[in-house]
Length: 356
Image 1: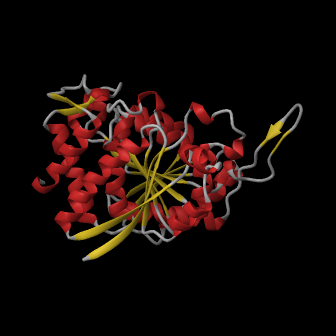
Image 2 (image 1 turned 30 degrees about the vertical axis):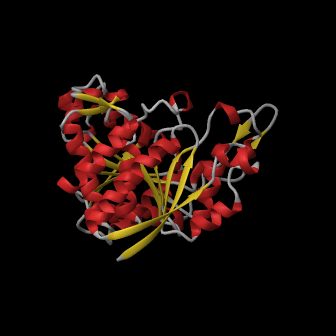
């Protein structure tokens, strides 16, 4: 029997609750598919600060690097907001990404027919939307130098190397080959030299993928098109700051942040997490939606462990549970037949695994 070592970072707020439900589903699917997952609980974020005084202990880094994948809940909260930046929970996550060397952030946005009214967009605009935003994660303006804040001005520098562009472009084209074979590269090449280099390198990489259709779009137009006609997109390839903005816009096309997973891959070990935050205001109430974390676990199976059928089973189980009308509180106003607690939703999805 194949065995995998999974690092669990439950984190803060609702993090422990949603990770518990993902584990239920993972245990169910691993039993059905004939492999074993061995979990290792690690500290990061506010939970690590409270115990060890730092947001990312070295032990956590080393254990993550020795794992096959990392499943992460959420970190942060008002309790730690007044700490110096280098001691805050979010810094722990940024430093972990850097230690892992993950350069590609994958953010799928899929509209479930059963929840089509959850979005503020018209159903006819949303029907059939299924896209993946591939965002470069460790370069660009967030990491560019020089950077400075002076008395009467401040500046950051957007920098990309050909290596950084090439590796994220390859990741996007590889993903497109497994989808509808369309890549839309988003930049600002009419204004920025760094975007001109981006476009040149993406064109070169595209030559190695003749089956994939490549188009280019300026970021301002892409933001408009995401709202106007989101179903035109398959894979969106873009840089760090543009991807940060566009992936959040794409997330709201689906109507609920509680449904959306993400993956950060390309380094030594992949990191898989829901896109939502730690929501400390509802922690412990049993009303958080675990589906985004459960779908993040499915992405972990697909992109880290190569357990494609197991990933598909989780996705089918989630879709079937939504089709049958089970909803957590955040989705209770959308054709709910039964409103479930966090624990109940995880159990229902886990029980559905053997049926799909």
